[in-house]
Length: 575
Image (cartoon, rainbow, N blue to C red):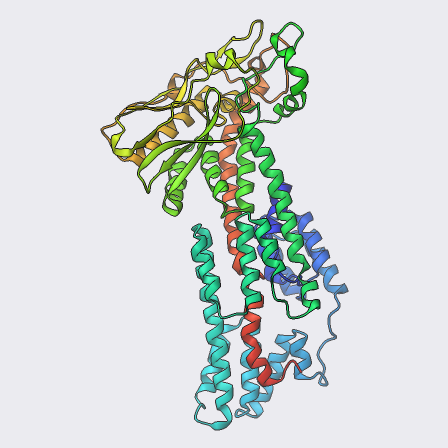
């Protein structure tokens, strides 16, 4: 999973723009994001670097935790990069500027200004160079000196053009801040509005909108938007082919993640019992042949893997509504009520409702907590319901959904009955199922929601206490949202848990063998839930880095480039 997370982060951090050599800051941000060294080295070898790896830079990067292997790759890339030769007295100002050798150029311009303080063109070029170097304070100090001569006709056009550039860059920086804030708070409409208001070309706005499309998982829309961009030349369009590659890569990763998540939520394994014996002497033999491939997948099912899958999905498409709903469900399974409440309240604030996957005796459905309408209700989930043993077996064990749509102020009582799993139910088998007619939520005056998704698998992999804790946390959060202390409650009690967890981690068993007899499996199951929260926290931090990369990496470089055009043309540095 570490390599997968690193690949996902690399995809998010990579600009959906023209390929550019990595800057020193790019390397630092990739390292902070936790990108694996192998991936980082491949990125360096692919794109090259745009900075000199001198002794000072090497010491700085080493101090930030960059490994010797990565430093070696940077050094090799720097030696082989097709960079211009060092500056000579014969190098023109324009050549230095176009080559991006800004420190050398700044030193030369300062020397010229000392000899001729009234050379307004040189001072304007120095300001431009300092801005390119991100030396904003120094650039603004030079501008104040230049602006002091705004009554001199020879200085006016330079003062005006430099002011226009500084104002434009400031507006762009403010737009970055607003955009990052909107993305972090899931405010897609606000993020789109920021892009719409930018004083840049239609092409540049569309490239930013493509990023927003990808963050929402709207891959077809991103492709369609790309196909309609009015590129100014065929060469420009060719260079932007990286955009389509990134769209396809993101979509492929998204499809793989969703497919595995769907197996957890909507396959015939979703309502499976803890162990599934396959033997000629059991009823299971009649079902085994057609379900063989599904049964093989059981071996790797765990609440920990599911949390990782959902976390990775939220890194890839953090503005996708389905992914955000699943993030609440995954947080629920970790058993940490404090984090659950924080996340749930944020989601309700941002989008007004949370949808949680559930299932009953013969159907899937969603439980919806709606803070805008102040209702809690069920909605159908149209995925076809499958079970390993349909019919009488499921009727005996899984409770039936009783649909409801209840205003918060009409709820009189909340009850939970998520008792111990029981063995039996299939002649001669060792199958373990949840206690008969159990339910995660039962409301008065009416309504029963039997099982949140993975409620049984959670028991199988982490034990009864973990399952009861999570079930109780769900009830506690609903009471928190309703905000009515007078509601009569009878919630699950983790202290009353009995028995050892039954593992689902070692694959299919022969008849009469209980997974709870394997101490290693039992211990692994107990430890698995403890790692879920750490996994969720680590992925949350990585997601914040990905959010910031939307505007802090190369995504906005082309927007800033537009701002420089006017002054560059006035000074003739690109001729």
